[in-house]
Image 1 (cartoon, rainbow, N blue to C red):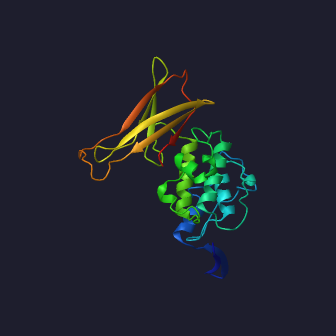
Image 2: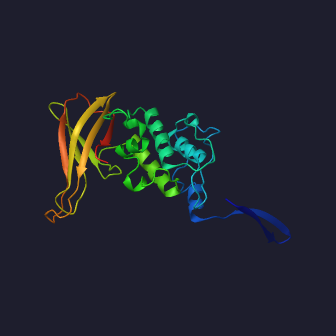
Image 3: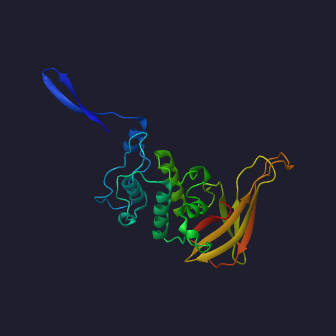
Length: 254
């Protein structure tokens, strides 16, 4: 961000004041009152995260800047991710880095994965709702600020996915105690017609984290559906003794 000095004459006293200017985007990232990704207050201030990330408007995000945002928002040491260059970071590389952060936080990204699937970080990130189809039209394209914000929002949501919150696919969950276990319900929000469905395919409990594989389907072109408001949902009773600490949704059809 550029700065210049403005001189103000107050009587016989000459006062020199630093004045900052920049685009709205630059200011929104640097103003402590509105900076969306300022360092986590629960993270000890270190040399790495003591200042705020402030990309210039319209520029592509570099590998080093992306590592900085991950460190500041999650508290994970990103020094081992190899993201130190000033080259623009691609969506594919960003997805791989985010998955490493997810693993560092104790989430098993291999849950429900077939052999070889983890070789495609974008596909895995899409299953977890970290990126979606509109973001992955070109996996080699460089990240801009808008896409970075979406990825970070989805990452923080995945790390702390609470009941009633919607993931990037608009799916939320509820867990209700039952005489035997807990009732898991997935909801896909408000839809404009019939023909929308959501199905729980498989569940897995590991280290007190509940992993839920699900799939969704939409009305097919040319088919007849009722033009009524619907709220697609599905449920399953899970035989567990205590409520899991964390729920991770894994979308099957991406």
